[in-house]
Length: 362
Image 1 (tube, one colour):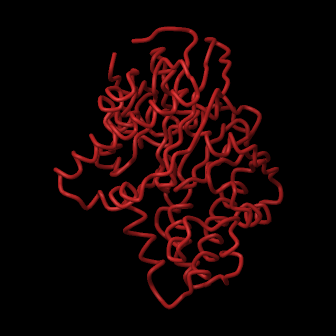
Image 2: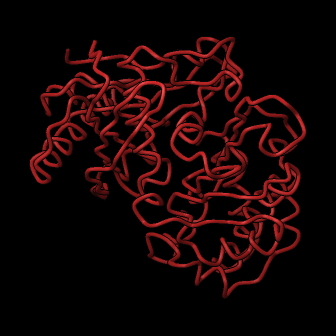
C-alpha cells in the first residue's frame, strides 16, 4: 500500500452515457486540510465497437462478459499509458471506476468491468478498482460515490448536481435545513443523458447540442405524467438507479405511441427538469454546482432554473464540468491508499462508512 501524504493519481471514469473515457490527473497533499490541483485531463471517445458491446453486454453470455471485462481493462490501460506519455506525467496510481453493467444492490450485486490487473499490466502503475462492492456487501447502495468528493473539494455550495447518464445530487443536511446533522445525503434523481443521448442517436447525433432539438419539440403531457409517476420517485433515499431500471422502466415509455423524436426529447427534458426542481425546492437548496455533460445542455439548465427560482445555479468552467467525476475518483483512490474511508454510509445506507477498492499491480 502507498502511504504518502502527497500523491499524483489518475482518475479514470466511464459513465453510463457512453460518451467516452474521462482521465484526470490530480495532485493531492495534506492530511487534515487537503490541497489538490488538476494537472491534466482528457476525454477519449469510445470506438464504435466498444459502444456496441457495452450497450448490450448485460444480455451477453458469461463468457462474453468475462472476456469484455479483461479486454476493456487492457483498453483502459493503453489509454492511461498514452495519456501519461502525452502529458509527460509522473503518476503514482490509477483509480478506475470501471464501466457499470449490473447494479442491483437489493440483491447484493454491482459490477463494474475493466479488470484492474489488465489496466496495471498495460500502464505499469498500481490500480485501485472495484470501489462499489464493499459498500454493497455492507448493505449499502454502492452509489453514489462522489459525495465525499463534493464534501471535500466543493464546499462552497449547498449541493452538487451531476448530469451524466443519470442525474444525481449530494448535500449536507445542516446546509439546507434546521437539522443539526452534518451528514452528507445523496441519491440518484432520474435518468438524464442516458435517455437524451438514446433519443439523439435516432437523429444520427451523438447528443442534442445545447438542447436545440428538444427546444423545438412539444411536451407530450400524458407521457410526461407516466414518467413522473414511476415508482422510483416515491421511494425514500438512499436509493440509486442502474441501466437495468432504465431499460425495463423508462425506455419502454420512449418507444410507445407515435411521438416525434423532438417531442420525446422535449418531454424527457421536462421530466428531468421537474424531478431536479422538486429535489431542489423540497430541500430548500439555495446554491448548486452543476457538472457532467448535461451541464452543457442550455435548454435543460434553463428549464430547471425556471422551475427553481430560489436556487442560485452555477455552471463552472469546462474542466470541472467535464472531469469532476474523474477528479473525485482520483480522490477516492488517494483516500484508499491512505486507508481512509472513501464511501459514506449516510449516502448509501451501508452499515458503516467504509474503505472501498481493490488494489492491483503493487
